[in-house]
Length: 442
Image 1: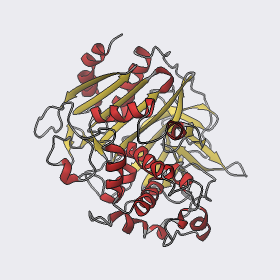
Image 2 (image 1 turned 90 degrees about the horizontal axis):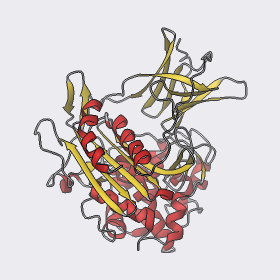
Image 3 (image 1 turned 180 degrees about the vertical axis):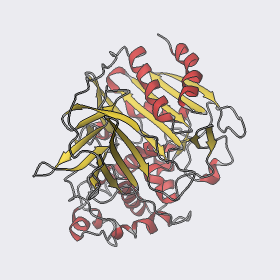
């Protein structure tokens, strides 16, 4: 089946998902395909085209990891040396963590300190350094190296280490050592570079439809964790490098980025150096993706054994449904992978699973009502344009494991129990979030 069929479906699927505009790129057996639909802004009605910039969000972390590894190959960084040896001024809340956390911990989300943070230190060249100076305020939630919990703050620290060692700004390091050598000339960090070019704006989903959100959603210090703007065309250049190699890294180091380093947290099975791993049947997927404040969402999925990569860029929270739908279509129709079967739901007493679980500004809430379980990811923020995702029904598909009732093919949350058998945390969205005391919700 050809991508022409997907081209015809794209606009329809985008409308169903409440996505004003989408740009998708497919790299299959060396051939590139670009597809677009909709508008970059419902206020202007400007059509999305192949050169429209979107925020790729957390796929930016893969560039941060590659920048670190460039410096490892230069011989000026080591993955397993404590980062305090490169940043002597570093102070974390836990003195032991200050002494022991390494770049490998940071790139595998296992540093243990609070990861979901908001640190606005302005738009100067010192923004990242000023942000890291505040890391002594971050709670050390888990011991270093013990738990995988998705950690944006860890990538800020990794980016700061790379910046300090390189002697220039983080953005210049990525531009000169990665973007320019790979011909990614339509990828930018700074808003003043983006605003003079064709770009998409984020939309909040409201009852009467998508509405432009008058915020970018990220600050300059967030660059290593999620600050890159790019086009689907440029993202395919990144995919081509990841699948086949290029001059910026040796093949061995490039493959190391994909190789499993440790177990992940649902929905991720394992983590490489920034890249997240999960399986589609018997096929290994290497993926990332991003969510910028529920305003711009993206997917980036590779099936290396099938010579396939798919990127999807969207400008509303509806991208959370549209992106995976496009990826699954490509896996099933271009790579001829089997369609995943849904897992049967189980009638399990939820016991003490309902409640509120927090990591930073993110709250995962599980409630029981009318005989069903509902979950919601809540963003605790004072920015009115940034809305929490709507609640969704969940079902048990195994002991302590939940999946969306509407799609049980992949588990979405797993409850963790303490030594006494009590639920004390939950894995969701790659995070390991602790249960708030007294938050049992029936």
